[in-house]
Length: 139
Ligand code: DQA
Image (cartoon, protein in one colour):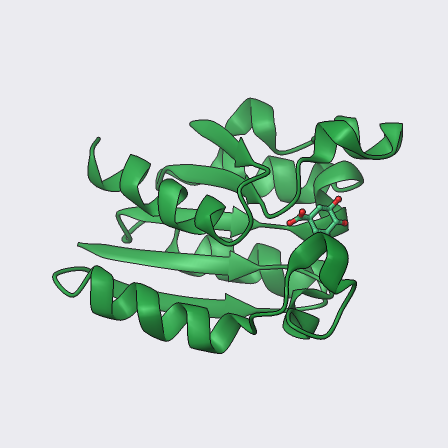
């Protein structure tokens, strides 16, 4: 079972950035915890601040991996291109967000990705990633 977590723009700053919204843990230490918890899964991680690199990664993994947990950050609300990339691959994608985007500004209420994802999880802090992973494993 091969699953990749893909993080989009500004998520390299987790633990530093707007801690009141995104918490104080950095993603690398959380990812180490996940790898221990899901030791039977081959877990990969990719982060980019560039839209095209996220699309390239989706193309790279999207016909061979068993799942993608994707937090595209603000591209969620702007990128028809990432939405199209998800539609074009066969690997199931779960959209996740750390914050509850529906409690925030209205521009965050729309996702270009969600229609092409198997589901969306948001608002549970970093636990959103864990729930995303579990939902893929239970399929
Ligand atoms: C986010 C929510 C987005 O609206 C925001 O642009 C992010 C992070 C989240 O995980 O809560 O960068 O995807």
